[in-house]
Length: 547
Image 1 (cartoon, rainbow, N blue to C red):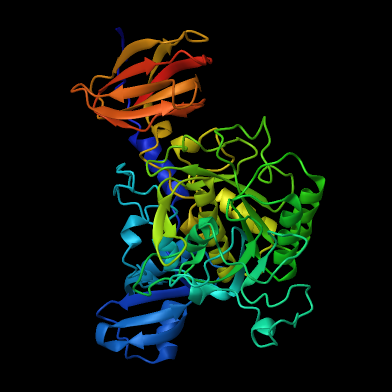
Image 2 (image 1 turned 120 degrees about the vertical axis):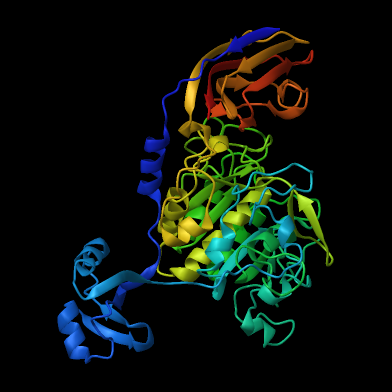
């Protein structure tokens, strides 16, 4: 057994961390230019408005005489900090505060809400019984205090269709009123599709129909995450409680579809006014015609949300379509688990993948009236599509490119996505408030480090079994940093154990430039094993972070 002990430094990082947190923290929401002032006992709120205005040097908007309080208005261009300082020095003022805005805390009453760790992760187990890390979610609950969506927003689910009879979806469907109120068997709106009330099907691209009913379940699962009806006392809740879901089917019951069908599906969604196009599908090689269809959606102002893919592939060096088309409105989404780690199957790319979202063991609606837990970048994508629907509801004048940049720029940096995506974990609240999430104290990048020097052979040998120990005396938690990690996915791996032999986790596949999740205590044992089939580079460990 190889043993490496790091010596812990005594230098405190508290000051640096506190300053960093203050720099990123969002100011509490308040009514612009308004302040609540409690007067000193020598001054009465019952005095005339003119008298009070002169004493305070401000316009008195209203009074609360019973508490000797007045509410004043100042020009909105004035700095809140300066106004507070000036009024605090006024001899008539006892207390001065911004006129803060409070909102109801909107937690839905949907009975399966607790199983939706992607919306609200409090450390609960997922359906695979993995214990989560609190806060590894999209910040939905805080976002819902701002908006739960709008029926003015149309999201096209370009997929296997939608189960438009599902009790959690039927009230949030897009409805083509011209066809619903028209004559059966007639193309009432002249768009080339007969009776496309809830959307259209291009499975037989040469003979499209107006029936996008899901015969697979995938599209319905995506639809539930985007926009299952919220606070209705049943099932689940979508990211957008209020939205219109357009079913655009080109994938058949076996999950496959043609380029021709994809082209017609995208053009249909674009023509019929969808602001967000959700695309949990991929495959094929580069297609100029498919790129042009996406470009048409960009010209029309739609956001094209695309799954990064499930091949554990680096999209920067090996493009995956449609996620890596170089069109301004494309936002590619990777999948993370409930501990913030990049899913073992998820594609990644420091430049070509934009953000990550929950995509492992995600509950949502399926065929019939039921629910199921599925995994994939297909499940991550609708989280971002639902977020985009919230953003359109709040700021309808944003362009599609501005929406994309807002989602990426306000995403939360997490260790599992560092070096794997342009941004971090998509965060709905930060997106809606246009703020940067505060630095994560659970992120090892913010901790102190000790150097390590642990490497496998390059390439490693078949049937390898090697053990290493890392000990950082005095640490409460440690995380291991891999400058390079490349093994045969699932078959060649490193498992982590505590002193008692309890398994703490496992990594496999490609994980360059990344920390492990934090391990409690000052010790962890690493066991590297490989089989006899494929030998890759292996790994290099250069440091451990600790706190």
